[in-house]
Image (tube, rainbow, N blue to C red; front, side, top):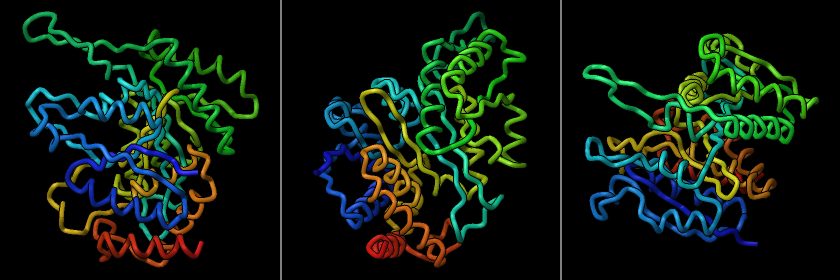
Length: 334
């Protein structure tokens, strides 16, 4: 059966890493029909919007999208495409696996955690006002509904992926009502998942734990702002944003993306690292139930790194095409 998937190549190096990822997916044997849609800074210059209506319509129709890095014009009143997609499609769960890869010198060997970040509210709701000259206020919005469903997602994920622990990250010792609500919802949901160990961690202690022994945390579930910060910290532990995948999951749609930037300084030079988007595509295949194809790509990618093939950002010399061909050949052997 062929899957119809929305592909948003993105800006800068986006089209290059998207093409590489398509080639790797083809090598896995999974059948995909691509519905290519354009969004981002380049589109804004022609269309006056970073996210044309037809892009959202495509994702709603196909239910699944793969997205390269997208830029937002600075200082021109355009909203972030990433934020708009999450809000318009109610993609409430941001999922960021953080895992060491062979052949890359990480801060810690064997790091393997998953950060599940609530994606729709907290300070990112954008509720700000000037209450008097020189005094700005930003409202931290936390709801029971959002807390319950993100905790439920984290525990379900842990069970599905054979994880042992879910750690809720909060600052309820200071923000007793807002973060206290998250903690209350976490404890309630944990009762329904007795096979998974619940763990409570204050956010500053979590940051320290991540650079001492991250694996003790296992699956982290947290609010939008904390999750944003901890996700980048996690990426730094294993080699950077160029190798870390990401997904935004909702009830009716899912968008899998590279979480790094558009890197306009190297666009078109053929040296971009496609690893993050390839790993995001692996997550996408698992979401689609194509577990065998996902495993072939994962095994092929790991084998490629074990042989020392990597791009310049990871200390290697491989071009985008050379890395892609190496992964495709390894996938073919898997």
